[in-house]
Length: 484
Image 1 (spheres, one colour):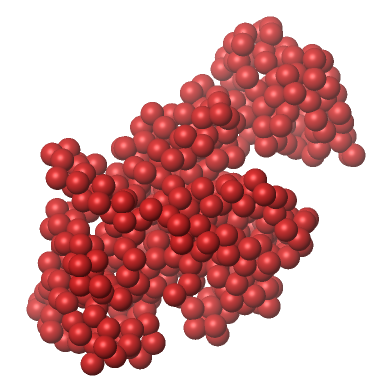
Image 2 (cartoon, rainbow, N blue to C red):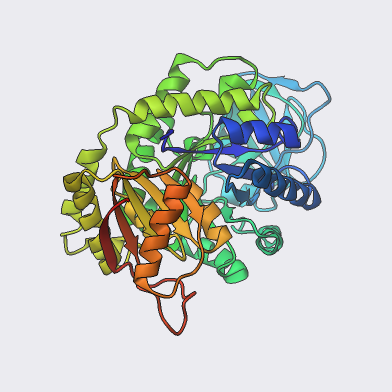
């Protein structure tokens, strides 16, 4: 059994050929991320088709996550070759269009002056260039650079999420969401989420065609964390913008808090941004990056995400192999049994049901399966599911036994690739519980995921004889089976 923490890899110029995609799958990639902030929709749809073709050749169910751009303010273009912005210097920020230079930065944001006050912090690009407003005039503001750097092209301009008036999702986001949902992606990430209503606005467009990922990257999202988790199918700890909008020393603690709440609620969680950043150009990561990846595993994350490392890096497959090796080593010492015991105790609390996305029957039965697998020495837990919900509920307990997710829906099979430890398989639809259990074990046996003599657990929802393809029923069947 290979590593159980899943890997999301962003596809870009360095990795969108069929050959490199195949190498990424072989290296351990579970989910492809399409960053819709870069490139046109047509190019991304071509990548989606290429991913499907290569995954079919490799015999691996690879999910696709389309990441919406969200609201973005970009400064007017700096001169070719860039300019040096020096710490301590003063610059003028002016709303409107036009070029920027060393002393004047234009910002195409009409309410810039109204939204800033003396003491407001403004950051450029990835946050390395930061300035503090010292004066607000009628048509411009003056700010002093706290940290300097090289400004190139049209860097992003970051204002506090509490004052930013741009909507999220944007009108462009909703158009893109409809297009990628129609194309069949499994996940759509909503950028700059500030409230549960932002997620629901996208859901009103895509319906059940794709699962929604809420990117937690603002202080407002932290303030409404429980509501956002409840409204989302998946959550992403987007540490880049989170570290710009929040004090950077808070980010590690926020990461642990977000992951803990997501696992408790049965919502898969992705940890993202700068995980192996140095490998964009270097053949090996820094020691700090290795520790960062391992600590995210110790925190309990379902998945780890690579961005520029695989999109523009010099060896995308090497990056995935490195991350997989670090994650698997960390898993060997993670305290998953203690986590399962803690989660079992939490389910007894009166407020837990309100916080969880798992229905009470499924929650109870997966808790029982976690304990039964441990007591019976089960080698595998087979989760028969039409929607993926059973597998996600079981994954909360991080069992030592192998977890196999079986579904008749190919999209659900692919989407289970984002849940911790779940190995997805496609099966037929069966009319009775006995058939479902028998064929689940047979399918896992043929795939060499279980062996004769193994003790396995089978979780399922009893089929509806009238509507056998009905999704969403509670998990109400637990069988312990000896594989013959």
